[in-house]
Length: 354
Image 1 (cartoon, one colour):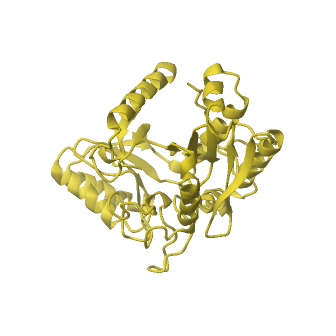
Image 2: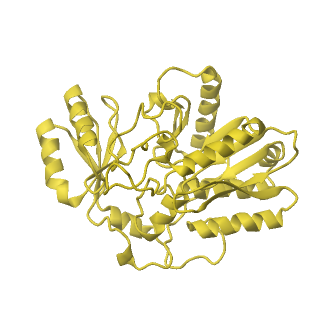
């Protein structure tokens, strides 16, 4: 297993006052133990208009399953009243989100591309170009799509032989998931530079399509305005105060059927229609054109420690469920053996998706 990196947050070229502050925001862990408690938090999630009140880091799904909520300081009294009335016990996971963010910010920006700190969109894109020049015999920079603000969705193709099977890897679907692009970039570097025989075998016997950041607008926004921004940046035509959609819920497959909110201000808003977000429309077109060249699609997110596979809209098992489950069990066992971390594996529909 490749080592897991501990990466610090760096925000460059900005005064602290330019960023939205999460001073006083608390993160709570609750476990609904009755159906009435579950209904309370489902109703709270449904009624939540904007994340300046409540942000569900892990939404309610079933009895005895943890719910994780970030609560704004101006609704803390209301939230404690809800807990009291519903007789729901709680734990505070993080007492001040802003302090948590600040604690991970290094004082100085690295002058080179490394894995000691997070990098801006431009730094990541520049590194893709540098890698393509350094390994020009097999690495090619490709542009898969465009964003609402006109940015390129840039990735690389690594070719070890036209006849070899391909694997598609993407990250940065959600702007705030900084560990996702960082992980994808680390994998990319390992595929090109590692001398580990196991890594070399995997690297050299496949072609690779790697896109570190599917949502460049959202990712850039987390560096200049809102560290916890998740969505795209296209304004809603249905609500003048709401911006963006969850790109991961904008695919044209079982669109708007599960794990979504039809409130345009919500973090899990799936958009006005399938592929309403140009990011997903253009990338889907790129994937369709190249799908015959790869047999596996891997998406990296953050938070939750879950290794998940299809389907997300139902608990019905995919035809290859047993094989995928065995692979998942082997992967999480290996990870726990090396790092002591515990992951869950199974189909997304059994675990409320991402």
